[in-house]
Image 1 (cartoon, rainbow, N blue to C red):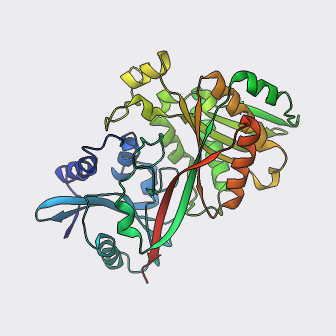
Image 2: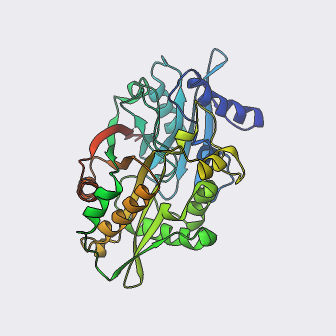
Image 3: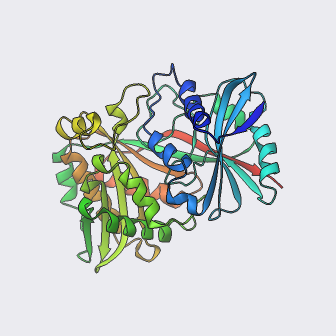
Length: 368
């Protein structure tokens, strides 16, 4: 095998093409994350002000058989990341060969991880089960043999949950019994002031996730770039904030399963407000599933009902939007508090049990 650094336009095209070829005949894969891939790899995002990205093609017998990017982020200095990994089946020892290459290139970095794509906000995880399902938007998809490449490494498991969004009558009965502290005010995103709201989102992320596995602090421009790439599919109710006596103390992010707009591996056309996917979503929304993506509350304001107020608002908007099913969480198994919180509040508001659904993993080992 030969490792080739991507330096030319044709090599970059090969890098992207290698990923698409792996899924060429797969009916479940969706290429809706290509915008994020390009944002991270192409070198034009603010992420590159503190991180170095090295896209690489692996050649065997003059054929591209694997692609990935080495990423070293000075804000996550203990890891070299192997991001956006895609490969054909049957590459014996591919993980170990990548590890050897990483040792040469990053002699002072103690660890390597497979499955983190630059930052948790950009995506993470290699799928471990349910390979015969189309992924919910924002959740990773990979083929069954991928995990075999890494199963000799330390595994950090991630889980997601599925649940029903109940009828409006059912919800109204529950909502009438939910008492929200009058000190808590819920505010929705104002898309006309996306920059300011994105800044609050970033500040709360950095404050709430400091001890989360693989977390690295963000600059607000990085999250703004991410929101901008989906601006025309984003609605105000998708990002909500909780204020306690006027102070922003928590947020909740959810969005529809935009993969239901797509067939096969067609890229989501989200950047043009007059694009087919945007117009279809706005005028004849066929989406019936939503993703409960992220919730965070400042440590000093937990157990004050803030989480309940946020989830209560989300479920209200989800039912009003006609969504029937939810995919909740993207939670590391070791993060027991988050799992218990998600189960407790979602089950209380919906009146239904959440079912553990997909499993994912980030794999890691030492380089020294």
